[in-house]
Amino acid sequence: MNIHEYQAKELLKSYGVRIQEGVVADSPETALKAAKKLNAETGTSWYVIKAQIHAGGRGKGKVKETGSNGVVLAKKLEEVPEKAKNILGGTLVTIQTGAEGKKVNKILVAEDVYYPGHSEPKEYYLSILLDRAKGCNVIMASTEGGMDIEEVAEKHPEKIIKEWVDPKVGLQGFQARKVAFKLGLEGNAFKEMVKFITALYNAYIGSDASQFEINPVLKTSDDKILAVDAKVNLDDNALFRHQDLAELRDLAEEDPLEVEAGKSDLNYVKLDGNVGCMVNGAGLAMATMDMIKLSGGEPANFLDVGGGANAVTVEAGFRIILQDPNVKAILINVFGGIVRCDRIANGVVEAYKSIENIPVPIIVRLQGTNAEEGAKIIDESGLKVSSAITLKEAAEKVRAAITS
Image (cartoon, rainbow, N blue to C red; front, side):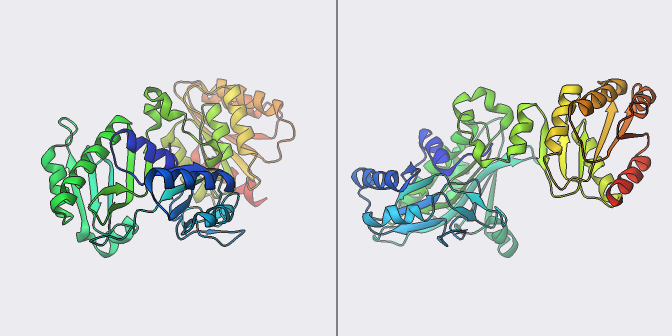
């Protein structure tokens, strides 16, 4: 589960991670109040206004309606409402949102931390995630903060520092010091970075996160280390242990169909193709999508109804798939292991009858327990549904459906 920057920073702060202070706002008026509050608490006189959407590249992104960037600087208190107005309610297009962009419902008014002093501020990159190949968490760091880590990996792989943490013993002090040393830090900045890395790792473990990315981590001119940005992804499977974090979910940032599918315990991901598919099992779903491509079509979605599929889940799947106007056919590919094929077939027939005017052909491939009985139920239903036994037969029927 993704959360907003302002939520991520509050989470980090609760674990002792130093952050760029900020106040969230949802209107020009509340933005001005937020700026005044920051001025009173931090003394800042410049204000960074950041769009809050679940996407990176906000600083370089553009708001369609106004042309404003997603991250702007107000050098006077009086500038805050107008700059906030140019972002709020607009559609921000970044490299990660695609051309359709995302609507900005909230902004973060943050303090200016690039203040002048006895040394120049310096940006770093820091992230923590699971390295599945090694079975360990890995801390990744770089002196090239502010840049996309993919670009750094491609052009300057030698500038990426990696430190693996044995889950049996956790992060050791010498490991945090090693990362800080390799970043070229010394003196108070070195000590501050060690504290920062340690607190960040504790937050990562304590929140059951799947990824932390802080880009940039800033060394201020007076050698403080703080998170200027924060991208946090929480493990959905662990949210039952963190009800407070589960409440941070922003449904407005998610695909409406995926939200609807989640309410029916369906695993759904929308794609850009023309053949809707409904399967039971992630592996079978991947094979089904390959089969659709080999038949000349493109998968319109990933939809896993799980091992206990019935008429209710099948109907919910139909309704979600049919909301996509690009779908020209629906392929149901089910292996009857936990659930019998005749039960699935009856579920398909019941679901079909409960939905009026299904405009596209439906191909049902059933294999496993009672597969023949299931095919017979489909064939004798009198509905616009055809059965298939083999993958080849199903592919041929999909091809015929999308080319007719």
